[in-house]
Amino acid sequence: MIRVFVAEDHTIVREGIKQLIGLARDMQVVGEAGNGEQLLETLRHTACEVVLLDISMHGVSGLEAIPRIRALSTPPAILMLSMHDEAQMAARALKAGAAGYATKDSDPALLLTAIRRVAGGGRYIDPALADRMVFEVGLTESRPLHTLLSEREFSVFERLAHGANVNDIAQQLALSSKTISTHKARLMQKLKVHSLAELVKYAMEHRLL
Image 1 (cartoon, rainbow, N blue to C red):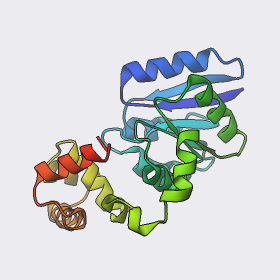
Image 2: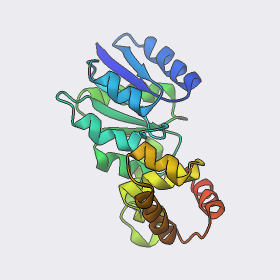
Image 3: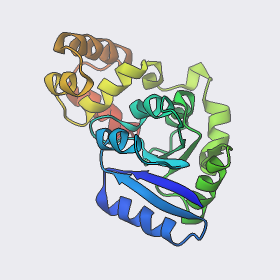
């Protein structure tokens, strides 16, 4: 039996995933979380083979949670679940240590296939993304500007795009406001934007919101 932990901050989506997994005879949901902090706390005493992890959770994001999950004494395989069908986002998650990447508009049967594959030690990439990853990732001329951001800058970028201010982000990431302001200035320079409105517009145009 494949034990699955579902980490997704939208209750309706989480319940739908749980119902889908409940239809499979070879897997069961053994835990769930609605934010990153709850996920990391609950995982410490919940044995499972696979964590189905939303990439854009509030607080500790899915990307930030990956290395912390991997640091557990018996880390489960991580299958990212995202609304972003972007090759660069998938590459970022896999580089951080995820075993697979599926999008929320995937066929339900493919999601179950993905869970089985990563539970068995394999890798899974959404079929619609696989070809694009081969041709887009690493081609510097075609890479969007946000791929130039460091992991920390990308975390700050995501939070700014969702409306958080510098002080909020500093508290969430346990860093000083001055440090966050520095990251903000650098990432805006890399993205070639000059205001928060332009930053949000960039995020929307690249389907990062």
